[in-house]
Image (cartoon, rainbow, N blue to C red; front, side, top):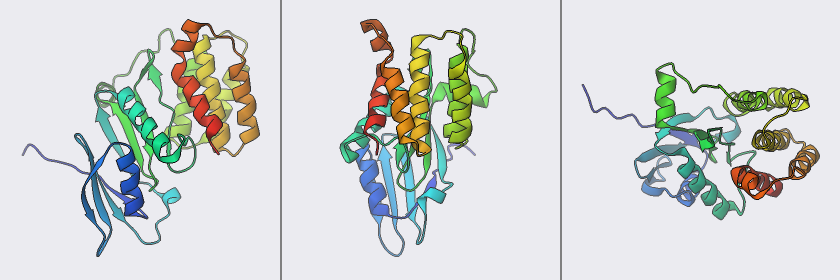
Length: 240
């Protein structure tokens, strides 16, 4: 049999909250039910998510997750980022909801995770990257600096595994090394380390890390190359 369809059913504590959140991110609500149980369907082009409410549900304890393959992860990240800014006046980078740091390859965003008010992880990945993973292939790490490699590992620990302490330890060891690293890699690593500090409740530490990042001299070309990381740093500055 062909042409089957699989649709994720994700839990939440408040359907109205979920609907408002996803509508701010550019989704439209195609179905909404309040009785006997809360239920909603939100759609953004070909992306469709279904949500159901549960009495006593705690978003922080949620295991809800789904993988979404998209043609352009960077475009969707930018749209979600602006949607969250319009809804909250900032882009939450810790707690629930939030956006995770988007890992990059060759300066292109290849994926990220959106954690919604229900604690569900919507994992966005470019379709070509998803297919590479499914076929057992991966992007070459040739030419990647040691710091960039450590940052990639820290991102997996912090965002995919949900272990910010282990991610921070890994990144601290890499940042303490004396071998030189490209400025773009150093800034990206410092910004993510500040994000980890915030997630671990170390706001003063995050401020010190961001101050170190801002002290790095950048010419116009270098600044343009790390613009997204600088914007991410601004998001962290605004985070409570």
